[in-house]
Image (cartoon, rainbow, N blue to C red):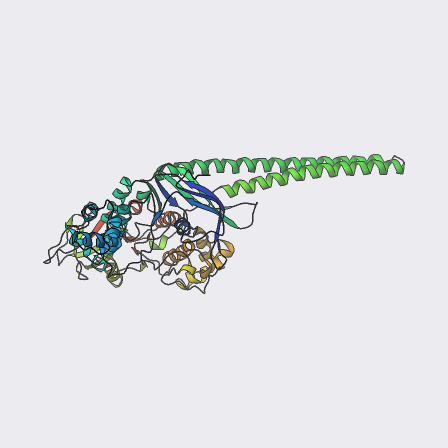
Length: 562
């Protein structure tokens, strides 16, 4: 039967070579247009994209695509000596074009066939790159090496190459990670004009507002199977529509929990009433049996016991069914993602000096506080619980500035640095300060050695580490769980941090973990400096001030880059 969808999955099963399952019996279709692929880290978004490309093979089931597939991986492996032409995927055609235009007779037929109708290939490539905002002022740009481009320019160039080849199906894996604001805007514009089928695995809400549908990889639990599995669920509309659907779904699920709880309470009450009636009848029966012949009394007692047994069986079965229905209803309600914690010791009184440092603490580009550039002899000051957004293009020195501020603060500092890698311990994620061999509780107590263990456990419960989870080794945790440990270690440290420095905290962070970070920081009462390209995240933090680093132009003059 002919495949009527660009991408279709039927009863797909896949697991890693070490036996770790990823998908079990997944069926879904991807329609034409732009689809955002979402889900918590570790649910298999990258694995699914690699299955669609054919780079990975399913253990069972079928996966069909209607055409060849273009793929931009999350970890874009680039050789610095590679040219822009190679990154665009047009090296062979450009070589053939040069040979034909130079009149070289060797391989003429093959070169003409390779060129096809693409005689204006160079002009189209330069125009496309210029449209992305890259400095492509002529064919010479196509000869530049990747080593002369920034990371954002290389990613945008690779994306332009996918648009240039224009295959009917294109897959993008976290394309906005590590892109600055300017590069993100270029990507958004490209997605809005994209033709064909586009599937984007991303945690970027602004990008997800530009898609036609959301495909959600959702971990689910059920009494029908042991453990957890992943379902792929398609939602029509962009991120705002998806969030509205989830809110309605949660409301319906919570109503089902209330109804199931009420039913269970009713069944329990009726069982107790039935037991009371059985006990009264038994007492009356024993009293009546005293005046009856023994044979007749035994027969009546036997019938009464059988009748009571039937009633108990019926009532017990109904109560058991009600309890199972309540358990299923609770399974259908999504776990609470917010983190609500009490951090009174992080409070900074208004007016108290938190930071007073030279604006030129390190040799960087021009630093602006709000709209005004800071003079070389100016000072960076923070007083009270101020929140500051630190922005600027990639490579301008934001991390360098944060590092320099740590020893200059007048209060205890908590520093959430950019993490290395992503995923889980198995895939190489590293959080500074975490010891994989220690438990969650031990890692957090190492930063607060004099804290009462019971109080630490109580706080960890608010980070969703309840019961035995607090004693689980960090090496066994997922990426999102490891992030929560790192966050708890910083926020629960002693002395309590009264200045938080956050360096691109949402890079590679899934949407659930980002929501948890925002909710935890809502209870933080100290000062904060946050470096981020994620406008939605910054808006949620509601910073009162804005520091912007701008690159110095050639000759030392500073230019604004927004």
